[in-house]
Image 1 (spheres, rainbow, N blue to C red):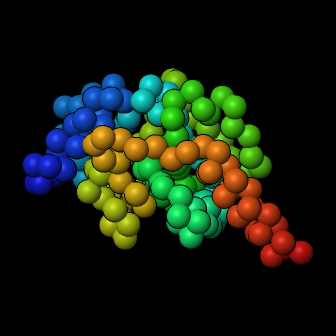
Image 2 (image 1 turned 60 degrees about the vertical axis):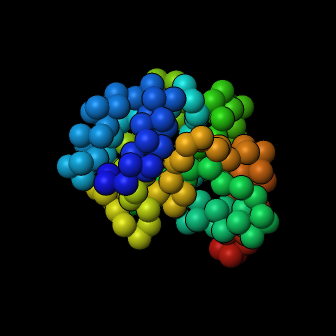
Length: 152
């Protein structure tokens, strides 16, 4: 993390999530992932990778604003406002909230760069903007239905 502005934004993001900032920065300096608590500043909606990418593309095509989105080997994880994971339901998705952690790469690790098989599609910034869960839900259901239609 060489860029002072990026470092300040990362520190703000980590602080809002009540993460161990020193540990996170040290992990990122080593190219590792940092455990960042979910459920305080934001929750996470985790969806299967193919549907998740289609959801992101659909939201972008619709002009919806995306907050941080993380790409893993198997999933796409979208940060949504805290307390919204409780009411989330969509097929093949799971949520992370209070008591869960996200293994987060440095916000400078944006696809196609990766750290331990993870990268940001949309990196967290300060101030933190989060994806609207209703827009995400609609885009996900649309993408999910389109994928189902492709299988038949």
